[in-house]
Image (cartoon, rainbow, N blue to C red; front, side, top):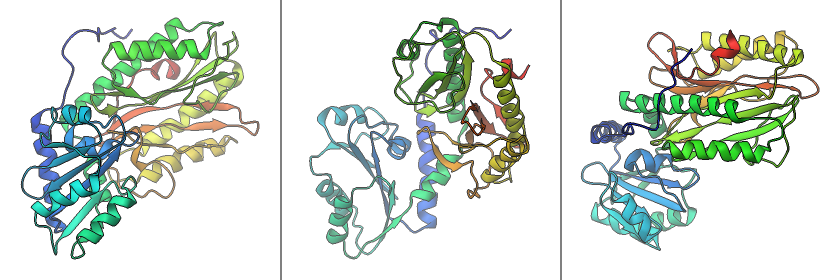
Length: 378
């Protein structure tokens, strides 16, 4: 029986200045290789990962930008005076609130004398066209290039500090699932369960989450917003638990029976767990991300079923990052990557199961961060 650790005690695991310095060294090595005088890093409250990686600050509302020079101190730009104060307490003390970030970024780049040089844009998927248009007019001699992929390549490989936080997040997630199993009863609403999840997490230092929930006889696709549906004795509660602890996510996707699994559900589980094992056989350095999904799909198709969702994805400062465990993603797996592997199994009536958990790619294979699947594998 696993030991119930007291997660309400002790100091939280936090990123240190050493981790900041490690990141900046890798980033500047990439900049030197690509002859980049500076980076403009873009994030927002929905996709905060890039700015979080550079600053250890999570924008909680609207946009945030970082100007990161090849040499010298970086500057962070935020959308309110409150955010300016909070951001300055993290890794970048030069925190500036400006209602016109385009002009503020222009002013900072002029101080860096970036004319006739190359500047990388990180987070192009979040970058404002208005700001981009302003900058290319203000700096006609500058070559702006997309450096998002280069930063994601750095972010994919986690340090020992980062992996330590991921392990604690996974432990918290397992305890959260234990709590859900302890309190869930027929007659409760999905809303009631979700409220218990939120209460448990916040008491234990979870800063954010991407939790999904649904219920029914054979639920397959959990949703962001819980309903007022009342749980019945024969129901399955489907959960995707993805809390964020000290900036890092882990994910646990499991069904929980209100009473017990039916024979049909046990069959779905058996196929899904066999597929998961096949995927894990391919989760090792040198293999491609797509090979994990291919292996799982083969098992599920051979059993006469369908796998409707992608096989998994990386996690980090955001709950879904590259690489993606799906056909077409030929990213080479490397030690230090953290990925959730989650096969899904459905029949022609869209009944089935969805399950998975988080792993670290090691030098020889993988390390499982969760223990909650063990009860279903016994």
